[in-house]
Each structure stands twice: as C-alpha cells, then as structure tokens.
Length: 401
Image (cartoon, rainbow, N blue to C red; front, side):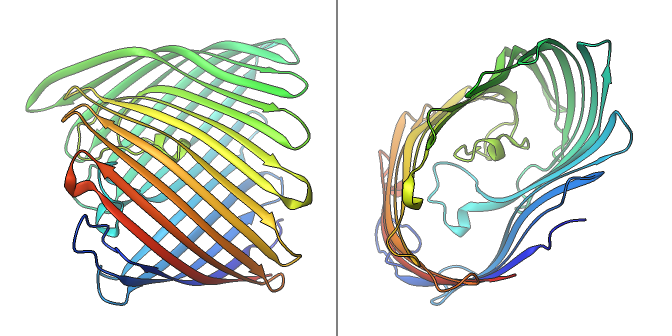
C-alpha cells in the first residue's frame, strides 16, 4: 500500500564559453540533457521503501565530449521478518569526480554504485537494556575499468542502556573485511561508545572509539594503522524558522566505502592507495522564512590522509543559496560557493569560486521552467589546473501526477 510514484521528464540546454574548462584555447559548446526521474515513498507497513532516482542522456552539439548516459539514485528499504528482525537494503548511485584536482568534466568523472543489504536483530534484555546484532554485504562498483571495485562483509554487536527516556548510551564492536578486484584485502575493526541525547529543541547523537585497519597485498608487506575514530550529529531548532545541523566524522576507510554519500562535498582521490584516514565536518544553517523565502548556508571541510603513501589533502569551504518567490508563479534563485584545496604531495593550493542566479516559472502543477546564468573560476599553483567558465542554462520539467 503506497501513494503512486511521481514521474518526471526534463529537457535542458547549457551554453558554456569553456566547455572543457581548459586554461587556454577555450571552446564554446552547447550541452543538451534529456532526463527521466522517479520519486516514491511507501506507506508504513511490514516493508518500507524510499526511492529518488534520475537518469539522463547528454549530447554536445560540437562533439566536445562523446554522448553519455548518467544516473543517480538513492534507495532505502527494509522488511520486518519478525518482532525483532529487520532486513535492510540500500543503494547509492552517483557520478563522482575521480580526484579533487581535476576540472570535473565528463572525462574526469566515473559512476560509483554502492549496494548494501543485511539483517538487523534487536533483543530487549530487561526493561532498560537492548542487544543489537547486525550483518551486511556491501558491493561497490565503478564505471571506469581502471577503478578498484570491491566487496565488503561486516558484522556488528552492540549493547545499549536506556538511562532515561531522553538519554541512551552503550558499547559496540564491528568488524568488516573487504576484497578489491586488485586482490588487495582490507580488514577493519572498530570499537565504539555510541550515545543519543535529546532535549526539547536539540538532538545529539554519535559514537567515539578506536579503529584499526589492515591492508594486505600479495606483492607487498602487510600494513597496519590505528586511530581515534568517531562521529557526531547535532540538530538544533534555534527558532521557528531556523535549524542548525552539525555533523563531524573521523574514520579509517577506503575508496569503496559510502563516506562520500554521507558527506556530499567530500571527494576521494581514486588514483591513490586504498587505506584512508578521513576527517570531515559540515555545519549547515537552514532558514525557512515567511513568504516562502529560503536561505541556507553550509560550512564544510575535510582532511584525507592516504596512509600507504603518506600524503594529505585538505578541503574546506562555504556555500550559500537563496530562494525567494517574486510572484505566485515566479521564484528568484541565487547561489555562491568558495572552496580551497591543499595538497601535501607537491605542496600546491587550488581555489574554486562559483556564483549563479536564475528564475523558476511554475506554469501549473505539472510544468516548471527554469533559467540560470553562472560563472566559475579555479586558480591554482599549477597552471594547467586553472580555468574560467561562464554559462547559461534553460530547461523545462514536466511531472506526471
């Protein structure tokens, strides 16, 4: 039992004065994209699911790039198999940059798909204690054949104590084993102290502990690394219109993990080694003001320590978006973003600045028209990574209801 799925079809064209984002000899081209989308959420029941997906076909008028098909999807589902047993399924599909050093053109991207499934068993032990057992299989695949695909098997055992209706804490241990298609094996062990605490307008959750990761390759000696790990999520309702969200995480992981799905701004360097110590944060302030006005600001940053080769990459920045209805059918849009990258390997720095503005016109509940203009500039200590690009976009979306 569920509401009908919402399908949409869209067509847009984007004119760029530097379609390849080259430092010199810029070339103009028009990128046209035909997309199909679906959104569906099931009613609560024995089985639940939430799907948001879109596929697109892109074509460049002057053949700057070969025509390509892209897709992105987020799916989460679960089925209750008994009073204490739930089977979970999730899938994350995106086009991702192969490195933060590249210009993020079609030649620089690859498609990443992370599929995960497994059971979760929850047992009540007395009135205030709970035991959790879970297992999962995870498969990660990249579109480009030179990227490392991988399979992961994991298991977790945890105990939680309900100190009060608003405070829970406990202990957990998890083990996962990964095998890449390069025959490299990665084992990880994590011990955590998880907790949750809620107040009238604030929710705080997280875990802190110890992590150990071990990599093995037939032609190389075993490598072992350990670190303090943890995560924290704070959601604070400042007032009726403003919400603050702070997310911090530190993990020992590898490029086949879903870390970049949890921190959208984060980019793995897929050309580097496998074992990575990642620290990332995101601070978001969301304002839903009167009259349909929306103003959002996000601060973000991350550090990637590629352990096998001893290099670090830092990334931090700020983004903002503003949305304001002008009339009942017309809405104005503004956006800006600044990002800085520091690379320890060659001691270089890059800076990226973006601005855009646009309007949306909603003819009716089905038809939506959009037009945007934007400008992006990348400056770098390395000349071939620099570029300037100005662009104009116009498109239409039709929703089937």
